Image (tube, rainbow, N blue to C red; front, side, top):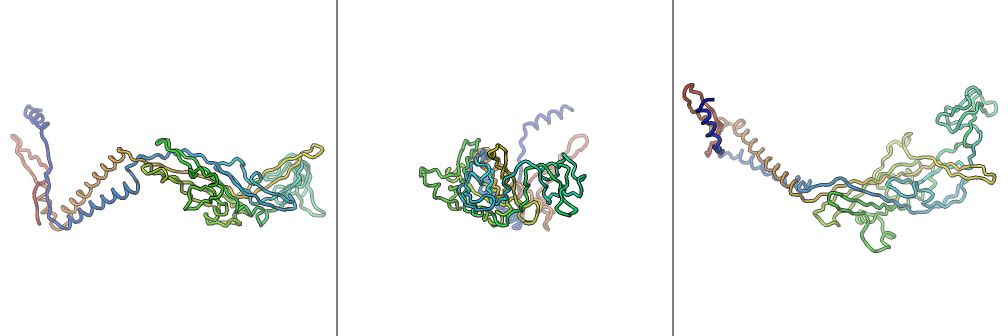
Length: 400
């Protein structure tokens, strides 16, 4: 690089370049420009700041704890169990109350089972046999109740029978009742207590009304107008999902109770309250499907006077309730405010860029505006006569 080039580079370090603007007297383009500005400004104010509240710092790492407690009693009189009163210790599993709990509504009871030999249920395909060789001893019956003994038991002169098994006998053979045993469970209530905390803001809240009135929880019931009373009638919870309680009580089902916390901490703490949503989570659209419903088995064990163990087997149908908690909290912070304001200001430049394209490419006199917007400035140099072209924005008022 020559001495003149170095001198020119040194002098250019102290140059200041400024822009010039062409004022185009075109009403259509001017109206388009103002509409774009208003649209961007409306988006920035309404959507970004009022709706999305992007001026806030947010915390979605919600810490939550759930306590549930069901209340209610009912009476039944069946051939297997006789007269019996059911309370929460009988029909709620697990009894201590968590974010998932199960309420029994229907039962298949097989009483007085003992470990001995008996015929496998004919409803088990793998238990069917024609001769003893079809029942190899010591092998368990797939999807059955026990272990084969090697004998094929047939009734009378029937050619087909079932394998004899060593199991808890008699095996379960009764089908599911078509009327729910605990149909009155619709009037049971569940108390759902939820503690939450947003660690970033050190903010804690509960879904129970902060009051010293000890009778409040004994008399209130949840409603949209009373969100701080977390006592729900089970029949109402099921109906809010669009289901019928008696239908779901027959074969069981799964209900989701979702608690949403959306807290604006720029407002008073009382403005941060829970919103509840209720949904049917199991396969409700195909009542005859093998995947519909919800059930499981459990047993209660006893010993007779001789010390021999026996049990009563229960196949329980009922409603499983899953309580899920989600939420977020927001509070004003200067950093996201500055970032979003800066983004909005930068977005305003899109309007100018779009109108420039319309002005110099898409209107009838675009060549006229193009000539006024861009000037070719030629400066000669000694020796080779090289030409530099620089695009300048002219400070002129141009009228078509």
